[in-house]
Length: 187
Image (cartoon, rainbow, N blue to C red; front, side, top):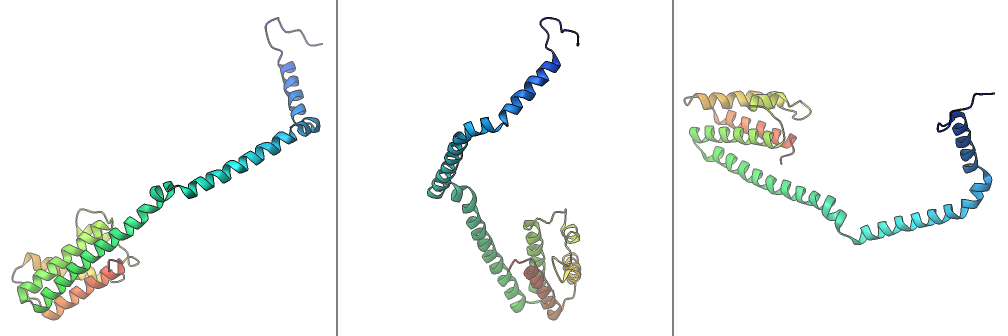
């Protein structure tokens, strides 16, 4: 026979036995039959609350305002920005077409600045354009090597005011930038 526990203390074996008996009672078929009606009532109430929630959400503008309204704003913002970029690009191309040597050089420098700005807005980080280009891959831009060559030419133009540039090379560089903008889905 186990020794008796001193008064005021709990016998752990007796406590475990009582917990087992309570658990056995909870899973017994007699208790389950008694609470079956409560289970059914709670399930019906839960379904009714869920249906009421769906109904109220459909009548409310909360979801549309909180989550879906911003998507329309983002697409409108993109379209607005896209129109502005296309307009600026058209001006650059016109300057190249009707301009002299200095105007052609200026149009290439503007195109380079515009390209750099697009990369910044697209989230390509870096201190300068060279670092931003390092983050691009051929998947992002199919003519990446051509862009690097065009960048070098534009930098040479910016450094040397006497740089000789043919109209054909200037048009070729603008076409390279235009292809890059297309790859980046700017226009």
